[in-house]
Image (cartoon, rainbow, N blue to C red):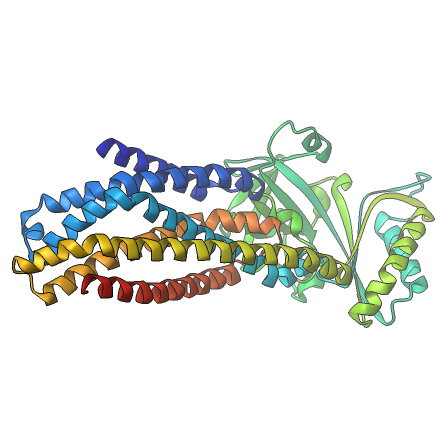
Length: 471
C-alpha cells in the first residue's frame, strides 16, 4: 500500500509538473496526452492505496479514532475503499473529463470573435513581404510602391466607402534569448527544422506607433519603447539585438497592436518582443520588412462575403501588374467568421455530446455505488444499534461517510483541472481562444455549475441511502 501510494504521488506530481512547465502552445498538445496518462494512473493508485493508507494513519491516532462517529466512519471507509476504490477513481476521471471538455468547448465557441479579431482586426487584410523592384530601379522606395499599389486597388475595388491604413514593421524569429542577448534567425533556417524557435520580435517606427495609438512620443537613438508577451523587462534595461545595443526607455502596459494588426504569430511562440524605435533599419535589414494594409468597409457582412472573392482576385492581379515582386497574403474578416463558426459549432456540439455522456456515466456510477453499498452497510448498522449505538450517532456516522465518499472525487477532479488550466489554455490558443480572463470566468462558472449538479445527485442518492439503512 505504501509503495503504491508513493508511486501514485510521484506520477501525480510528474503530471502536474508537465502541465505547469509547458510554454509553447504547439508543445502543449503532445505534453497534454502524456500528462493525462500520468494523472489517470496516479488517480487510480491513490484511490486504491493512498486513501486507505491515510485512513490507517487516522486509525493509528487514538485521540481521533476512538470516538464513536469517527470509529464507525473510518472503519466503514477502510472496508468500502478496498472494494470501491476503482469506482471512485472512475468518477474522478469522468468528472475531470466533463470539466475539461466543457471548458474547452464553451471557450472555443463563445471566444471565437476574439480569435477573429486577433487575426483580422479590419474587414480586409493584405500583407506583403520581401518587397523588391522588378527592374532594380530605385526611383521609388518600397513604401511608395506599396502605397501606389494600394491606391490603385481601392480605386478599382467595389467595397463601398472604405478607410485604410498601411503599417510598416520588421519581424524576425529569435533563435536564442539569454543574458539580455537576442539572436535572430532567418525564416529559411527555421523551415529546415534545425532548432526550436525561442520567440518572435517585432520592430516598429515611432511614426507607425503614433499612427496606431494617436500618442506622441520622443525617442533618442538607441532608445526603445517595449511591450512583451511572457517577457519581463524593466525601464532602463539594456538589451542587445544581434549585437546592436538598445535601452528600454519605457515598458508599455498594453499591446499597441491590438485592434490594428494581426498578431496570431505571436500567440504560438513562447515569447514575443515588441519594440518601438526611432530608426528601424538600425536593428533589422530590409529583408525582414513587412507591409500590413488594413481596409475597413461600410458594407454589411453579407455584402463583404459576396465580394471578397472578386476583391482577392483583383488584389492578386493588381500585384502581378506592379513594378515590384512580393510575397502576398490576404484575408477577409467576414469570411473568416463564417468559416470559424462552422468549425467551432461542430467542435462545440461534439464537446457538449461528450460532456453529457461523461456526466451520465458519472451519475450512474455514483447512484449504483450508493444504492449497492447501502444494502451492504445496512446489516452492519443494525448490529451497531443493537449493541448500543443510538440513531443520532448512526446518522452522523452515515453523513460523514457519505460526504467523504461523495466529495472526494469532485475535489480531486477540480484539483486536476486547476493544474491542467495553464496547459489547456495553451492548447486553446491554437484553436482561437486568446482571452485568458474570459476563459477563467468560463472555467469558474463551469466548475460551479458542475458542483451544483453533483450536489443534486448527492441529495437524491443520500436520501435513498438513508432510507435503505433505516429500514
